[in-house]
Length: 305
Image (cartoon, rainbow, N blue to C red; front, side, top):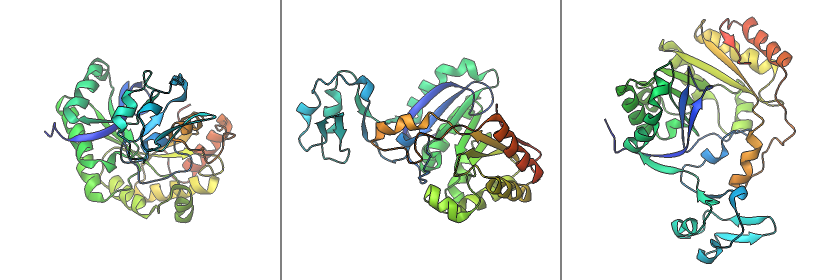
């Protein structure tokens, strides 16, 4: 086992009930090759560590300003502005903050360190739960992801992976070898729309889904329903037909829009591109999309109410 393999982790969330069966601990790995306009974890997009400012913790003491030499932190009418790419000695700047309002957006952990933290929750894994790797995109850190999953399985912990599958198949295979359950996203079936709304083609994703579904392992394909983007009858029908053609008994989950995403964007100095007026879909709308998926061959389609 590769206990010294290192990875960037931006969150470890306990007692999750939406990332697999039972009570789970979800480990979020940094870096993602997609740029979905509705991204729910913008703090996980960049591959490297970056400083961020948590407004609610800031007391305006100015301790950080005294440590900067190259304009990395500046006062403004709204509080502070950050230039994360400025050549500051960032550890010193962040250490000067007495409240933790300035901090790194991720921690570098070895597999051994991550395991020590995760296994504090072992008691919950004994009742149908386990550990899920999410992101960002875990396949952006394939060596760390595979080593961590291998260590978890050696401890008898159920493992799950949440992925966009936008990666070379060799990377996918290495991580899948240590994974009990795979959740993969298929956001849009039309390649042009996929490029426009996520920044990349879906060709690699579709090919990897074909191979994954043909492997016989347990896979749940998911589509986040974003009003005005992915939530259309044409999109869901097209995805359903594609999945049914890959495997007649494919499991397919529809995810309602999560309205908590916009609150994260100020942390990374960005605006939420779709705007804050988007609302979750009604139960009637979700039911209608579910019927479309089933009418196009996916008898194992579902959504969590």
